Image (cartoon, rainbow, N blue to C red; front, side, top):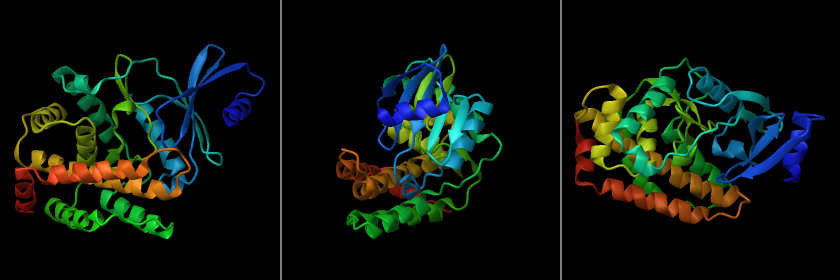
Length: 294
C-alpha cells in the first residue's frame, strides 16, 4: 500500500485521495482511487512483465482504442517508466459465468467483441504459437523445467496451425477471463495488457473456454457474433482455438512459476490448463476438426 500511496501523491500532487486495493490480480496490483468525487483505477504493473510478453505502450494504446469504440474505460494517465496506468473506474457489476450463457447476454458480449475486432489497428502482435514458444524458452532460461506434456501439445498446436492457415489480423484482447467483464448498462472489458493484433477466433475461444462453454453455447456465441446460425468451419475453428487458449495459459503458469515473487500456485495453474487441453483434445469431434481439408 505504501507504494500505491506514493504513486497517488505523484499522480495527483497535493490532492486529498482515498486509496483501497482491488482484489483479483495475479500479475499486477490494482487500486481504487477517489479524488475530488471522481474514482479511478490505478494499475501498478508487476515486475518482469516484459518476460510475459506484456508491452505497456501497447496496453496503453489498446485501452485508448477500447474506450474510443465504447468497450473499455477511459484511460486518463500513463507512466511508462513506472508501469502505472490510470483509467476511470466503471460503476458496474460483474457478470457471472451462468449469466454469460443467456442468449441476451451473449448478444451483448458478442457486440462488444465485434466492436473492438472492427476497430482501427492497434500496435503489437499476438500469436499464440509464438507466445508458447517464447514462454518455454524464457522458462528454460530461468531454470524452470518445462513439463513433458509440452511436446505432445506442440504437435497438436502445429496441426491446428496447419489446418487453419493464415487468418485476418484484428485488434484482440486475448485475456477474456470472467473478471475482466463489467456491466454498467453496456458490457465493458478491462485489463488490456495482452492485447494486440491477432486472430478473432482466439478471442472467441478464449472467452468460451474461460466460461466453460459447451458446444451448443459456442454455436450460440458464434450466431450472436456473426449474426447467422453457424456450423462447420467456424465451430471447428473455435473449438480448436480453445486448445491454443489453454496452451498459452498453461505455459504462462510454467513461466510464472520461475519468475514471479507472488504467493500463488503457478505450477497448479499450469497443471490444470494442461489437463483441460487434454480434455479438449479427447472430444471425439476434435480429431475430425483437425483432419478437415485446409
